[in-house]
Image (cartoon, rainbow, N blue to C red; front, side, top):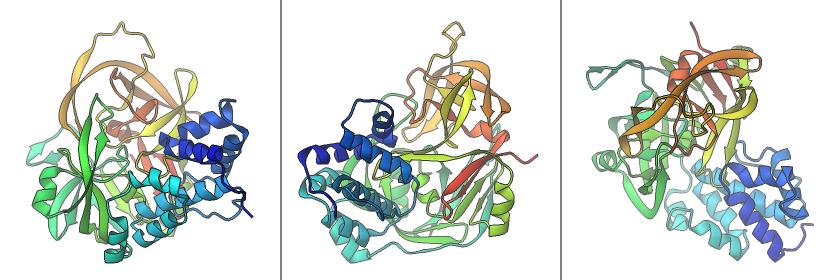
Length: 389
């Protein structure tokens, strides 16, 4: 029987689940900065791998804090998967104080949406997309992970961006494609500079990606670039991103073969509603173990805001696309090695003083000359591979 609520336990749940990428959880486990109750909850979250995508099982949750934390995470999982009826069900089970906390993060009138739509439906099939080095008739210096999609019956292109927690449709594209706006203003944060881009909730009647169809898809609307974020990538059965090709919903045999050649396992981190989530690997950089994010939307091979090697190198500017559009980013560049399970990969490291990524170091699209990303969402695992020759 779960223990009764206490003001302290409710406060600890709120802290543990609102902090981006579970930073408070990690800090709570490794230090003495929080109560024993909070530390017990943090250990339960980590031990049960509750940050991994997919609807969480609450089996084995014993304390009041564990039960409510699990319900919050289940709510976030169901929202990301478009299970609107389950979102309202989980919300109704929460104490009033926690309902007040989450209401500010949910689409307006989620109960009405659940009643009108029920749950988002999907039909997934195997497919692949060849990536091009031509954009709008212009020859680029390299391939770029912009993929064709069909939104509400109209052709469009979106950036396949593992560095974006959520799927965003630009204001211009939303108007052209007839995206229904739901309101609820918020902000999408740019990791490459200061400031936020205002966004609101929207819903796509239909999204088709190389034959796979998703109906009633929640997105954010705003900014100047449309991007397919981690929320949608985690709804396909599996995903393989190479330098010149993207594959969706691979066969079991293909997955088994690929995982036999893994270089480093991929890990997930997230807040409870998956509005701030990322994927990363553990690597050695400059002699120290470091979490390294994976961002296919970044034009830098490897970047960090940390002045790792001092500031004696001259700085230069480089153009960078993000949700706010094209911006000039100031950088200092160095040569370094990234070691993944005893394999060394030479990389160009860009130090970006004003960057605020979810991980202290981030691998960008140019790193996909050397590495590929494989996600098996059904098995809840992923890895980096050596790129094909």
